[in-house]
Length: 363
Image (tube, rainbow, N blue to C red; front, top):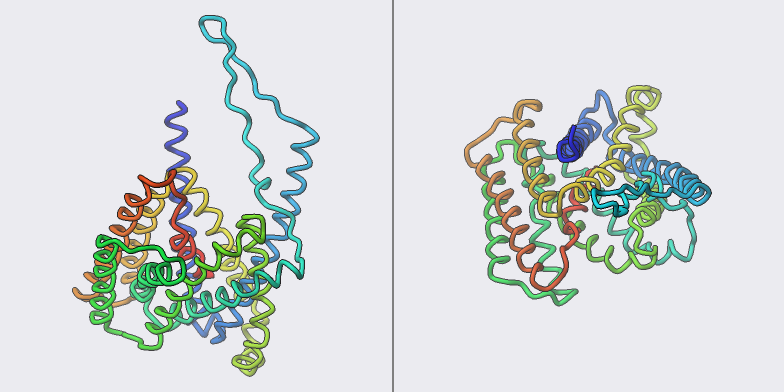
């Protein structure tokens, strides 16, 4: 197999893994949030446990990262040198570092935690309203209910960061809002509470992206350090919330709490919540930020269409048009932002909002 073919197979496998992990994560969380036969009606508890799982994975990954870094330092790798037809030395590609080398040691320092704490409050609101939205709305309507993230992001960026808004961007926002209204009108099992939770989730996603930009320097611009601190803080913040709002429900759910199936599903969902961050980064590196956003839009369309069959959601013409209008507006927005950033900056990283949308389904 040639290098080009190997690269194509690698890209296809990364994109496929991203789709499987992302869609599976949403579907599994829907079961945990709404199926009382398998789970318990305590979304705060479910979300808290997934934060705990993420903390544990970060800690283990940090230990593996330390070992990988020590091994790399103790056994330096030298790239081979080949000779071309003219007898000139041509260095080959250097060996790739260990996958775990990207993970820093998981340390919790109170001084850093206090600086991250405001972001953690937003993070808790983001994942709480996201899961409440998933609990109360149909899976097919889930992407539409959370579609206003772009609108809030543009508005808050202008208010807090002074970033101007172009006419093309406003046109994209108009398309997204139109799709949101169409999808809401066409939803047969419309839930006002679920839709409001989706709107609030979108607001917190946008706030999270803005706060993240300000807090990242505190953790040396390391995304995995921030993930660790955020989830430790969130695990602490959820405890009083669970005690107040779900204490009686948790105490009464002895059957589920002693079920291996329940804890297995909870642990797998927690793992997916961490894994989506990894596969998102891998897809961006294997393709490009633009391709990542296109892939995410196509994945969202498939996820919604599959929900009509898997979950038995009854489609309507207006509802389906709303889904594709929202996705079309989001994709148009991606092209507009890429075009606006291109003349003034180096190739941008994937829009932070897109990353946060992928990682809020603790999804």
